[in-house]
Each structure stands twice: as C-alpha cells, then as structure tokens.
Amino acid sequence: MIANRNGHLIYGKRAVLIRDVTESVCDRKKMDWLTQRFPLAEHEVFECIDCIADLEDLGPGEHLKLNNAGDEQDVQLETISISDTIFLKLIQFGRIYNPECTDIDLLFDQGFKVASIEVFEDLVAGHSNFENSELHSQVYSAYKRCLGNTIENHVMLNLLKESNDT
Image 1: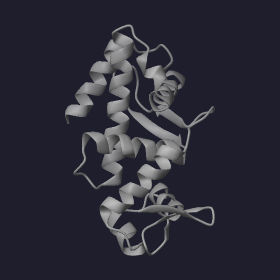
Image 2: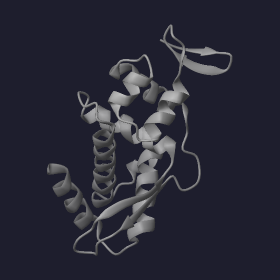
Image 3: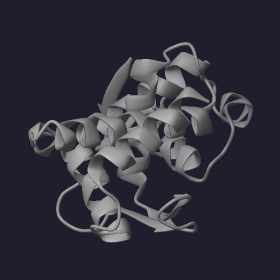
C-alpha cells in the first residue's frame, strides 16, 4: 500500500520511503541488497519503481546519452549517462515483457532493447507513433545524437532484433 505521509511517499505499514528504495535502485543495488535493507518483498520493490516511474515526467533535456564504441558495421552501444527517471521507466518497461524477472540490470536491458526495436520498427514503416511516448522519444533522440544518419533505419532494426534474440 502506497501512501503520502507528511509530503513523503511511503510503502506499507512500516512506512518505507519509496524514494529511498528507488534511489538505491538507481545506485545499481541488487535485489538481494534491496530486500535485506528495506522490509520489502521483491514485488514491493517493483511497486516502488512503478510509483516513481509513473509519477515522474522526463521533460525536456537529455536523459540518455549513448556512445558507439564500434563502427557502422559493428555497432557497440554504451550508455554514457542516464537520468534516474528514464532508468526507472526502462526497468518498468522491461518488466512488461519479462514479468517474472527480478534482475534489475536484465530488466533495464530488456526495456531498452524493446523500446529501441519499437522506435526503429516505426521508422522503417514510415511512422512516427513513437513520438507519442516520452520514453520512446528519448530513446530515439539518444540514437540520433549518437549515430546521426550513419546507419540506415532498417539496418539498425535488424541489428537490434539480432541482439534481442541472444
């Protein structure tokens, strides 16, 4: 149960501060650490993530910065910087496609890959539906800043789909 106490979002009868949980997630703490540190079960940690991911807007600015450590034939994307909000939103998005997974890093990877695939599927189809989602728009902007027009959309889509199969 999520509640507001004195202007702070809390979870459960023990009044765990939700922002403390999500800050620890953003500090890349593992699920075992989170459930030992806070009196929460795994599903309750994800409810805290969902709460903040749903409340926070991405707003203007650069929330995700990528670097291609490879070249046009061997794209090797690295995340250079990421805002806490988009990190939580990508975890939440990854959990949609892998609800049984509790590994936060794997959920982030899954969320990022699926959002990327959806963006490039739209671009290849000649649509811009991804612009209706702030998450997808930020992912697209990060790719655009990193790769520019060096890789055709259909090539990038194929690379993403291949990496998603492994």
